[in-house]
Length: 102
Image (cartoon, rainbow, N blue to C red):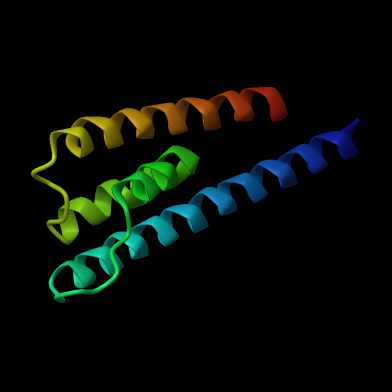
């Protein structure tokens, strides 16, 4: 019985690590797009890809990147959509926690 508990705890730790990694990547994507936005003719990262990253548990990185780099802060759908995706991400992580640990 305790072996099952440890494997679930390890899985949850893996998921938390995955969450942190995705948010770091999302944060760096926001930085990259901010730098690209100031260069004429540079390739940009689409807003759809940013929302996709946010939906795939990277919303915290996108949100923090928005305000640290002052990027996409005038877009209403970013100001409303990203926090909503963060709530969805947090609720899903909490559900996984309840199913795996408790």
